[in-house]
Length: 81
Image (cartoon, rainbow, N blue to C red; front, side, top):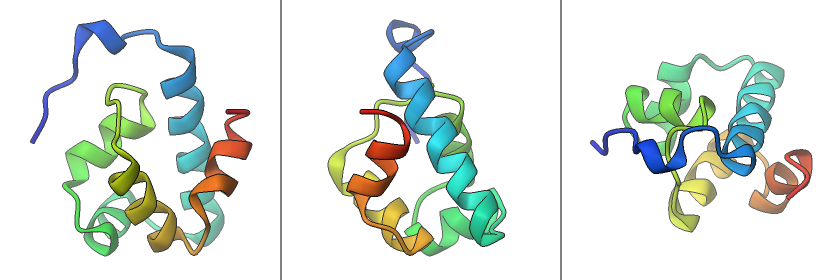
């Protein structure tokens, strides 16, 4: 599992996307663990994404969006990206 990179610390875009994912997860009533399982990702990795610590790939964004019942573009728009 990737470790948080200091080069992404404080990155506004990643923090905003993480917050949008966290909000969407709350809307559908999933825990981090349930979202991670549905998206086939580690729970710690999902937590790091929500904290803006990971620069996630397009494939992982797609997996998360699908698990949330949303399109990736909806999550990006919610993050104002």
